[in-house]
Amino acid sequence: MPISNGDSLGCAMKAEIQDHTKALEVLEKEYSTGDGLDIDTLLDSDKHGALTYNDFLILPGYIGFPASDVSLDTPVTKRVSLKVPLLSSPMDTVTEHNMAIHMALLGGLGVIHHNCAPAEQAEMVRKVKRYENGFISDPVVLSPQATVSEAKELKAKWGFGGFPVTENGTLRSKLVGIVTSRDIQFHDNLNDPVTVIMSTDLVTAPAGTTLAEANEVLRSSKKGKLPIVDENGNLISLLSRSDLMKNLHYPLASKLPQSKQLICAAAIGTREEDKTRLKMLVEAGLDIVILDSSQGNSMYQIQMIRWVKENFPEIDVIGGNVVTREQAAALIAAGVDGLRIGMGSGSACITQEVMAVGRPQAAAVRSVTSFAARFGVPCIADGGIQNIGHIVKGLAAGASTVMMGGLLAGTTESPGEYFVSKEGQLVKAYRGMGSIAAMEDRKAGAGNKDSKASNAGTARYFSEKDSVLVAQGVAGSVLDRGSITKFVPYLVAGIQHSLQDIGVPSLQGLHDGVNKGTVRFEMRSASAMAEGNVHGLHSYDKKLYA
Image (cartoon, rainbow, N blue to C red; front, side, top):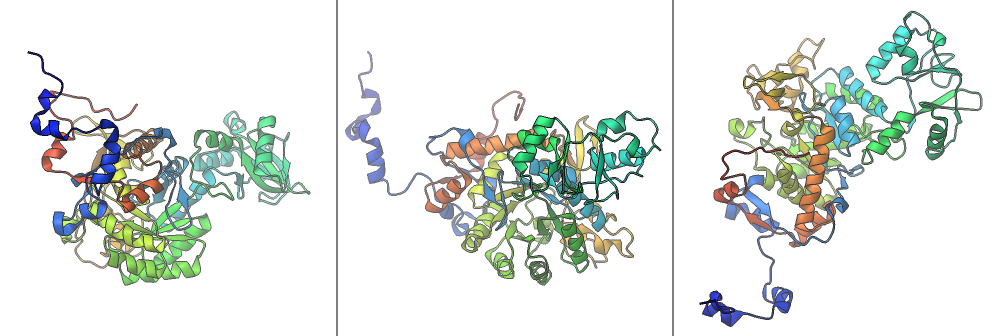
């Protein structure tokens, strides 16, 4: 016998059936709160304990726009904003100049580590600032007496060719020619002066030319470099055709609006000698300094914040790490422009296990960001990031940006060499800055009597004077992830799709929705975690992007 319309619903359900066209009206009138939990109920430690990213999910909203329209613009400090909310960690197996350059080109920010000599770190900052410019205000200049060999060495050092030659070998001296990569490549006698190979058929632009006008001259002339000269023919600055091409390929690049230079950030410690280090970094062009400490609420960091703000007011200072409102308040009062949140949540960190100090990351991020927002201080969620979902949850908890270490350590742009593991997989070395291997590294203290006192790992964990080093991190390896030029765009697209599912068109919209209670959350049991991952398959290939 066929089932009549409505028979399968049962008597109780039959009596309650209402006009389907009134569904939205009923929802609004009869349900005082949205489905799920608001952020503060979710992260109420008294009810649920302190949560981390795997302990909850964000509920979907209404999709009324394409994912490609989602804006990820976000502040990283009070004065500096990014197009992409992603930072690479200042670890010696994660961020040197190559990572910093490519993170900036892709719209994020790479923070150069300080487990090296000050001059070496300053050189890395200089490479970032020179890499892509509009007008290059301090180009590498050759004198007529320089040899082809010296020009080749400069090309190898800086990673680019095309050096102007001036009468005195300095800026603001009369321009006499340009040495290109092609000139160097096909000349055999390395002892010849560069005047033998340099191009003298030059196209120049006068001082005062706008960037748009200079770009047009480059396009029409089809030259690789455009020297900018004053009325006497003295070199003032330089424009590069390759930079125009980079602008086409990297439209989200993190650049200063005036000079078009890539934004550069670097970490330092809070010792007296770090003041000298910072002076060198500022001279190299540094924009943002991160005070690197596992526990930021210390007299050392507060004194350093005040010193930096007094002596280098043009530099933005990010303090941390913190996980409580009390820690944050002390650094905000001292004058920080941004905060870094996380203690013991990193993949190579064992602080919570060894020291019994720290806080689950979701709880830490929400507590600190909700307080810091009252003073206009952006926050970085640092640590515990294993996938796109964790990034979005960190942002939903209130962070403006997210910092990654292990997730980026296996990329082509991270320091170190690939090697094959015992299992035959391609891997790269990765270590926490609190690992014994990092704290015993002597590069930072090269030439000093006590190299341990200058080490970034011992400084970060206040262990410079310890007779016995207590590890707060481990050393290991991570699988090859390929180049961040593919991996970061994958992360960005994933974040955009996630925000589309949530129903918010921007990061600001996400934060507003969370604070108003319109973006809702749900607790996640152990069974729910299993259900939400791959299950029930005999085998599978987890390819994340193509």
